[in-house]
Every structure is written in C-alpha cells, then in structure tokens.
Image (cartoon, rainbow, N blue to C red; front, side):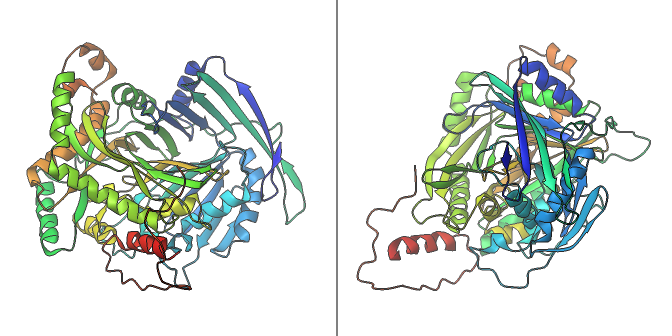
Length: 572
C-alpha cells in the first residue's frame, strides 16, 4: 500500500503464476476482442536485451489524442473512480485548456505555446506530452517499476515540435496517441523463470465533492468486441501506396537534395497491404515464432485497430542509477539479407562490415543521435559504448551502435524521449529538413510507423521501441510499412528492393498460414527464416575566469548540440 505524489492511495497485491505459458497464451487470445497490450522480448543481447513478457487486458483508463485535442476515457466502472484523480492532475496544469468532465470521459485541449523555448527546453513546451507528464507526476511513486502508461505514440506527434508544412490529408480516424493505465498486469521474467500478477486498487477523494471513491471489490471487466476480418464487399483493397518503380524515383529526388547540401541522409518508406484473414493473436504468434525480436508487441487499440509488431530497434530507454538518469539508444543502420546457412551468414557479415556506404549510414545516424542527447545530457557523458555490432534476425542482418548519456538536473525520461523524436534512423539528417522531405515525398501519412510503443513508468523510468516491422491492422486490412536509409551514393533500384525485403517478414505473416509453415519446415535459405557521467580527458577552462557565454548559430546542421556539449566541458 502506498500514496502517489497526487494523493491516490494504491493497494497492490502480488500473486505468483503457476503456469506462465498458459497465462500468457490466454492473454494473447483475449486481445483479439478486448482492449489492452502485450509486450514481449524474444531476443537476447548481453547488456542490451533480455527475454521478458508483460501485458494486460481490460484497463480502466485510456488516453487518446490527435493534434492538441485529447480524451481520457473510463473503459469500465473502475475507470470512473479514477477520472476525478486524472481531472485533478490536469486541472492544475498551465498547459491544459478547456477541460470538460462527463460521466465516462474527460475531454480537453492543450494550449498553444505563448513563449519562446530554448532548444534545450523545447521538450517542455505545450503538447500532448503535457497530458502524459501531468498524469505521470500525479501518480508518481518511485518504488513501483510496473505501474504506468502503456501504449503507442504516432509519427505525427513530431509536428507538435517541428514546424512542418503538411502535404497529406489525414484520416478522420487517425490517432496520434493511445495509452492505457492498467490495474492488473502479468509479468514474466524468462531468465529468472519467474512470473507474477500485479493487481492494483485505487482510492481517491474528489477535491470537488470531497467524496471518497475506491475500486476495491469492483469487477475487473471491459467490453468484448470480436475481431472482424476484411470484407471485400465493404471496401476496396489497394495493395500498396506506391506503384513499382515510384520509390526508386523518390530516391533520385533525395540524391538531388544531397547534391546541393540540403540533406545528408533521408529515410523514405512505402506501405504494402494485404487482407488480414487471421486474428491478431494468430498474427502475433506467427511473428513471435518466425521473427523473434527484442520489442514484440500486440496492442488492441479499440475501434478495430491493432498493432502487431516485431521491432528490432530500441527507441529510448531510461533508468535511474546511482550516477543519475541514464538514457540509452541503439541506432540501427546497415542491412543485408541472411544467408542460407551459418557459413553464408558469415560471408554476409564480412560483406556488410566492409561496406563503406553501410558504415557511413550508421555513422551519420549515431552522430545525430549523440547530438540529440547533447541537448539535455551531462557534458562528457554521451558515449558510444557499442560500435557496428551485429544483430541477426529471421531474414536480415543489421549493424547496430549503442549510445548512452546521463541527464542533466531538471530533465526527466520524457525529455529524453522527446529530444529524440523521431529517431534519425526513420527520418534523416538534418532532422527537420528530412522530416519535411519525408512529408513531401512519401505517398501517404505514416500514422504509427516510425513512432514508438512501450511504457512511461510512474517511477520515472521509460522503455520504448520504434514502431518498425509492424503490421497495422485496421478494419481487417494489414498495413506494412518499410523504409530505406538513403545517402548520396544510394542505388535507387536497390533501395526499393530493400524496402520490399524489410516488409517481407510481415507480409509473410499475413499471407502464409500456420499449415503452410509446418509444410515448409526444414527448408533452407533466408526466405524461410522467418558507467556514469564523466569528464573528457584534457578539458579545462584554461586561462578563462568567471562565466563564459558562447553564441552558436544553428543552421540546422544536426550537430550544434554536440558542439555546445563540448564547450560546456571546456568552460564548466
């Protein structure tokens, strides 16, 4: 039992799970018809990823947002008890306007910024993250690592921070944010061979009425809406958003921008579509079996919308350490197809490690990532702790860097999340120019692609993966989006083929049933595979006395924050 920072009394019961495997499988089945989420890591990498599973159904509260509008919905009677607490959290926030409370929901608007924010402080300007920050602070308690907000962050959230001219019309049903506050969570630690269930109850006194309400003894239930497969009679299915060859033409457009210096790197993508005849639970199991990944997930977002993914890339992970809040990322750039066997894999690894173009891609991504961290990290703490490491997946081999930093005083995990929005590995550099180029060149809005999924913990930690290698199921249609990192010497046709290769594992899960998989077992070939903050040595103030102010002119070259970080080390 504990009290949160905002005065919510939390009663927590922890129960062991006798049969973790069956418990998880029942949860996966339930997500076909009930809102909730499952996150599962089925890929290990020492010092980076471990195997674990975490999930829930029938959460009491859901947070959705688009642009500056947001809605907090009570999904059951337990959620109604929590609405006054959420209202109290938001009503005192200066960034929230026009907050209206009904019986089952809170509807509000985030205000426009009325002041100029410095580059280091831009993550604190009004946005939908103001809602997330207020709720996280109100429910804050540093000794519970599981309770928090779980869900998905859409690509369009970046437009609340970057002044971009939008070209594409967005669907009326598109959402930029869907997060859940669960009250019953299943946790499985595969390494320790341990599993447990967390059951939360909440008690809160409404400051308006002074009435106390509690979820104690209330049923943990929710609406059940079965998954509906695609009906050919209701709508037309367009197999892809770009005709064959169109992506290669966009690569040529990018190369023209590289030539005149407007861009150093760009990441363009295209979408492929297939009917999703299988239930989302079946789709998830196929991906888990055929394409193990550190960020596997199955999210039922309601309204016949699901995200089923096997993402290879961490977005941002933050944890509290004795040295401060550590932020880490693992940029991925550099891709080659798997070989037919271990010997051919070794040849492919040798080839990609010797490829200067692939090395340049990852170097650029990591340099921009270090620049993002330098906005808010302790000078000298941003380090590359893993360089061009090999990660192998069912059909692909990637080269990966591992970067860490420690946050300066006054910044938290959400600041770390926002200063990386979105990763250079899905946008490009300079980042603002690349985001505008993506909007102008791509054939359709990205929606969830290139955003993130994961947890914002009420204890101050954060764990998110990029929304890549994901099937976005909406109204029975499986949408698979895949991109390629472009540089000056990119080959247009090869880059288009790379997007098709990256999409192939997800399309395979949509189109190849479990019976086909059993029949093809044994077939060889890739096609069937599914430290704390420190000071840099030699830096000192030299002969300077007193405070020193340095003016840097930012021409959106992606590296001004790294330079500023170096100067802080010299003159601190």
